[in-house]
Length: 617
Image (cartoon, rainbow, N blue to C red; front, side, top):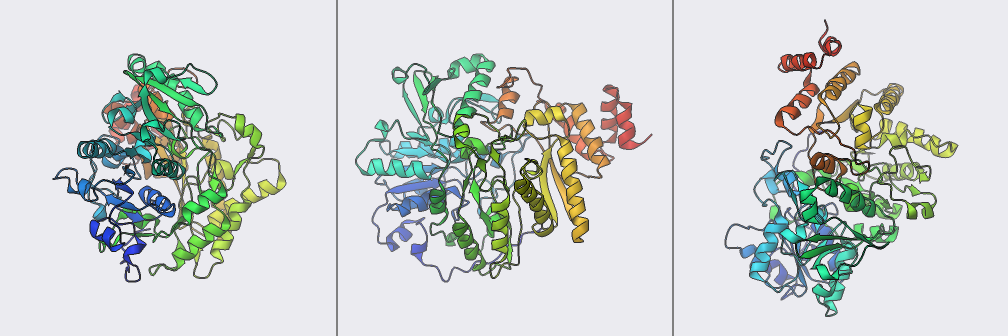
């Protein structure tokens, strides 16, 4: 569905409806100073899908005066970093909703020509690694003012990590960037705790115990290992021995997925030690409702009037139902940032936001997405929480769904029906990724299993905008096992359900599968067999990508170290451009341009049978 820019009517809004982005706006509110200044790598969109807006509104609701400096110019006289002067409490850095390097570069390390989080999609409005660049400027200008880094960039770089774009192992971001503290994960509770302690006269240097933060301390403060403290291999040891980096990651991921927040992680780096305090438990329903019920305008700031912000156009009529994901995909960073335990909003909060959307002047009756990190995990979790409290599994679905998992789709179906019944709503779509291994799961409970069948039918019949995108990711069971994804057989079963429901509902919708090439464990032969299998299903693939190693995923650790963190076994990964291209071209077997190279590759692998299946005899 093509998105067209809609003109936004700001006439009913007042300056007080926004967090100030200029001194003029600050003075219009009657302020002479601010408590917190937030620097953002994204444009300021006052919407709960944009992290800096969430943190700003959270602080505002707690009584603090907050200013936002979106996309400051780091290359001129630095006036953007000076304009609000010294805040009463601290500077905060939110580099953006996407990792800056993923935002800037393709899997081939080529510079992208656009930026979805910038007005007009213009590139070049943020530096590489904004946390490092912004914090160095702030510390040069105001050396004694606390600087706290948050967001995806800092969260996923909280310990030693492989940087694909520099092709080297880097230490924790707190070593590379002169920040006083990192707030990792979803930051509402953390930022309020920090603000309140500073407001009470506390010193940030003494706040070494705040949950979900990272601090840099003297090595002498590191305790001995025990049940509450895990001593990781040092950064220097990891540089010398990649297997130690791999072994570290198992601990990092397990503690990120602990229900209670886990143990403290310690990693020596030089003459310092990085301390990672445990995560907060998943938000309660009241806490997540409070975050989404803040007085967002749901619009880009008026400073962007007449300019299109592509990322906003995608979500302007969407509603997020929950946070967290228990899928644990090997290439995904969601659980590292949000955790695997689901925090679900109440029906009241969701319906309130949908009503807000229906009142938007450009709303035509269609909710673009009722979703979340995984669309159909709303209100799901462990039946016996005491079992969850002892569990460190990174995935509740792999290698098989947990018996303790309550995968009941009835609460979600109830949401869909109540949203569709609201005045002004013609139809609601599900644009987020659906875990069909969850909706196809059979538990033996007739009520739960019946609801799963109904979910698939209602999803396909009522909530698809012509094309349903799902993510089998590969066809090889070996590769899928490393990815922590279900067998491709299950995708075929889901496709049969999809086709059957389409026939019964008189629809001609498309099922669009996502696939990844060059994922660790994937060989050229695996890709050749993928081409054959998808050809037999009559797919000409379009939703495809090369694997991009991003910090804090199992797949990236395998790519860099060559070892699986959980088994210690060696795993192949395509690294050279030639190896990656050899895999990628099998997506386009039907393009005559690639036919000679594919045939040559299959001959070298002694697989004339696959040549015949792809191109005939």
